[in-house]
Length: 294
Length: 233
Ligand SMILES: Nc1ncnc2c1ncn2[C@@H]1O[C@H](COP(=O)(O)OP(=O)(O)O)[C@@H](O)[C@H]1O
Ligand SMILES: [Mg+2]
Image (tube, rainbow over all chains, first blue to last red; front, side, top):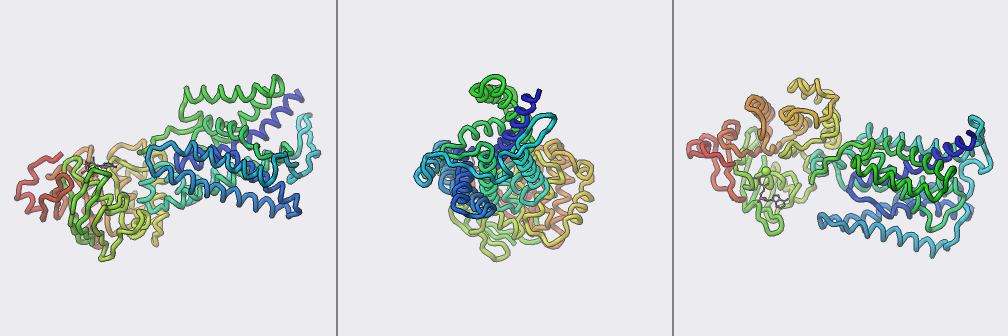
């Protein structure tokens, strides 16, 4: 029972991070109908910069801030060089290759600058040895912190989307770009905003995962991106809370399978889930049916 | 006052609008009449900025707005209700109104504007919490009109506002449009396939065929010329 609980808690923690990444993927998908396959490298940049800056003696908060700003900037540049130019030719799927290309480029750049070795990630949130006992199971305080931070951010994002003026702008652009522009919404700014926010979410997710895993290397991020992609699809493209529930479910499932059976099986199950959901409910379990206007 | 000078619109090799001159005065309704594919929507989109004319100038109260983005034109007081019941279907009626309000930097009071909408169309007040996509066609058109006129723009473009609606709803909607236009000298340009219908509500009309203006004049004159009898659709 204790082992089971430990797996569940670990799963909730990583699952909340999947939800964060999924939400970032969703945001830019809504505003551009493009899936950023380079998002994994943005996670890595956020975590790597934080680790390296702290190693050079930069103040912790400042290091995190710089890393997040960099992550936001990386996505804005991605949009400008790898997405927008390719959307001009309508119906083009070139962005699949170009966003993947940006990801590979960033990974290569990080290897050049920081080396290919894994870098130890410092204790940003509490100490890795701090634990709490919940229902008899010892849980790392870091796991709890990661969970809480992720859930709070997803909650804030939901509020932003449902209550703020710019949230209305994002949803309007997602629904119908032309109509949004006629309502006075500066579509271009909304798209860029979605990329900045998506980048910051990815940066936060990168830092939080590295906090749990303890190291970061240039190749980091791909496995996370795949699971987050599953969470985004299962949760439905159109729902922050949907992504959260899907992310948590996926995280718990992954850890249980890894704990009781084998870590290798976890990914397979995630993919099976993805295929089943896409077949049964293409709009996701919790998403709304999209009527995409052309 | 809207003035179009020598406007042409093309999509690649397709010429949708060719050398159209038009002027629409404050306090009047202008009808663009033409069959499907005549170029009505393209002309309206050129005015709101959704398409860029190949050549020509667009003047709003004497100011050339040709270089402005659609959202900038919206803020200047140009509203455009698209054809085909385009609204935010997954958002509630009220969310649609909020979206239509906030980004145009209106000076007035949102609460008052929305109360006015609900006074004009009480059915929308009843349905305010429902998704816009669940409304009937007539109710959607009422919402679209309300979104277009919410911030009292000086120029309102309406693309086939009556298409697919029951006659009783059509007269209700036309009555609203006429009332809006008369108040404070606003300019309305609407497109219709049914000439008889359009000429009943409009003060003047332009008949389009394959992108060109083939006839124009005030409504009485066009009716006299037999335009009203022709169903151009
Ligand atoms: N986005 C577009 N791409 C290519 N051709 C278009 C597009 N929109 C309209 N057209 C063409 O332009 C012409 C005018 O269309 P439109 O302005 O929609 O006319 P109307 O509104 O009077 O039906 C038609 O031949 C139509 O096929
Ligand atoms: Mg049309």
